[in-house]
Length: 273
Image 1: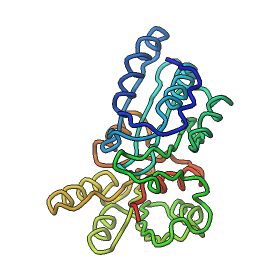
Image 2 (image 1 turned 30 degrees about the horizontal axis):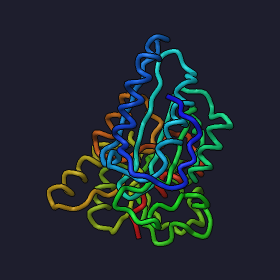
Image 3 (image 1 turned 120 degrees about the vertical axis):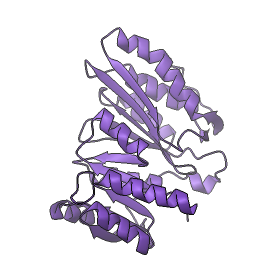
């Protein structure tokens, strides 16, 4: 599916769901012939029409999927709330080539490789209704207190993990509330103004997935918008990630993770000013 280097010079409107289907239909048989299963998933809310550079995006995905690193499974996952940057994660492939990084620079995107080996890309492709200001890239997100006024709830039963996340978010301007179990998550969400949840999954009293399901049910009953939620967990097998997304999470970060991955994830999901 690799196309030639198309210098579009401007953003165009495209259907993300169509791109997902294209790559699933094109690469599933090719990888199956090598004994590799391709998983393609689009998070709830990420499949809306967007504006950006689908030509270079297609070339990036073509280059990545053409170089599988495993002998069993490759996964392509699209996430990102409407009017927020698009996140694309590819696992089970070789590290990005120079050409891939050049294309990402041309699209003004960020690319990183997670500790688990997945390639995570953040692209300033806003939804069709977005303004140009809403589609600014997440570059330099860690500078100049980018999260000033942002109210974050982090939950983990490990005091060490909570401390690490606090240190990673130091000097970003974020206001952090930390709790140690899912029941406290629900209680805090009911009482405090919050902008985002970062939840461990395996916690005592109530796990993170159960806590978020409770919150989503109450949001729906009250007609409230869904608060952005990130699963921060070491349990990152494919079937587990699917369960998190079906349970209401917008995306995930696999432990252990780097500071830039945390920053980019929060930037991609943070509510618009």
